Amino acid sequence: MTSNGQNPSDQEILDRIGWSQIRANERKLQRKNFWVAFAFMLPAILLVSSLLLAPVAFNVYLSFTKWAKFKGIDQFAGIANYVRLGTNPFFADALYNTSIWVVASIVFPLAIGLALAVFLRGVPFENLFKNIIFIPRILAPTAVGVLWFYVYAPDGVVNRFLGFVTGGDVDIGWLYQENTVTPAIIATFVWQSVGLVMVLILLGLSAIPRDPIEAARIDGASSGQVFRHIVLPLLLPTLLVVTILSVLAGFTVFDLLWVMGASYPGQRTLSLAVFMYFEAFQKGSWAFGSAIAVIIGIVVFSVTWIQAVLQHRVDRMMR
Image (cartoon, rainbow, N blue to C red):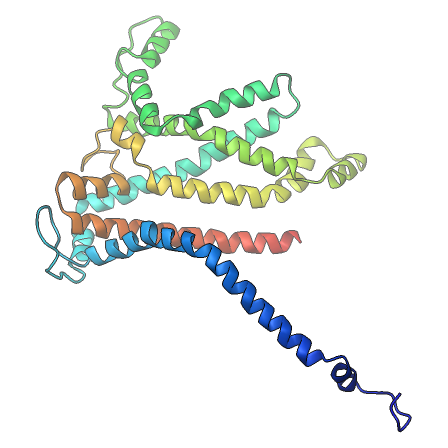
């Protein structure tokens, strides 16, 4: 109590213990910790800036110039390269083919990976099956493309197997026909990528608590009801992460298309990444190729941002 017999106010108590000085010392310590942390992060920031941010900025600048092979970049073109994109018929084909790849890279690996992750849990030789399925992921995409190029050859494994099943000669040019080349390459992509999707979903399944599942089974819920109403909602954050990775892979797919397909304008295997490479490095239109790269970056960033917002909302719902 104070000298006049009244209880001290909160401000008087804070003044007695020197709260203002404590706060000042805390702020000073926070500033010191910030600069110490910044000093440790500075090499990584400089490295990322020099190897990633600077090339991206330079690429954006090139897209507004007339830079071509063996020519300088002193001529500013404004938005001419982007206007050229809108009038180029191959750009619409590349955008359409890329959309097919994005959808395929999401649906098939996610569905197959989820099924494998669910059905392989607890089966005999579980780890062996998982390792076998994951092996294609560690192979380089170019090596996978070369391998499956011969698998799909007219005298390759696929045609020989179909000939054995049907009892006749099968001579299908899987990579030379417009109605078969895209499904064939998509099947190769799924074969290589489904292992990673399976592992990510397995990690998500292992993080799901057992209490709500056991409580639902005690209440009489079937396995399908438990999976639909408990496992799948709790697995949703993991599925969103897998979806983001699949979208990035679908928009930037290049190796398989370039190795296995007829990767030039007018073909079904023309994606945005292949179109960019063809224009920049095959035709030497580097400024036009830079404009295509900027479009790819904008689309990928927009889709990723939308999915990040959805994931944030899902995380808030799960809390």
